[in-house]
Amino acid sequence: MTSTVLNKVERACTDLVSDGQRITFAAVAARTGLARSTLYRNQTLRALVEHHRRTEHHDTIIAITDELTTLRTAVETLAAKVRRHDTQIRQLTRD
Image (cartoon, rainbow, N blue to C red; front, top):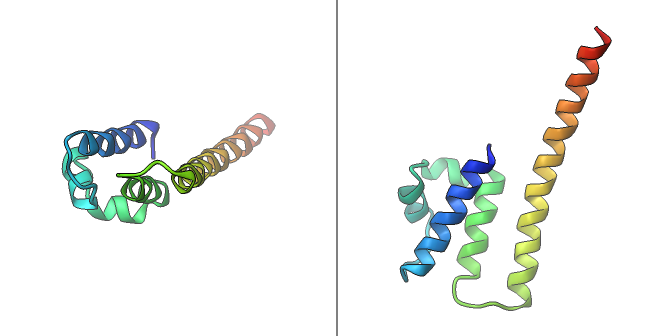
């Protein structure tokens, strides 16, 4: 998954809120061109949509906590990718 996809989903959620529409997986899928199954299956994308669904109408400490959880998941995903690339680079330089 690329940051472009994350940005598209984030933009779709904020646009839905701006337009006064409910955030649903179907609405986000329609705005991004992604399949609903992709949004459900990808842990980071699902967390992002669910975060926006929970925080649609309120900004509380719970919303901040949810946002931190979403960001933590995204960082963990990126860290795993960096570790994998680092391992690949080390293997290539040994050969």
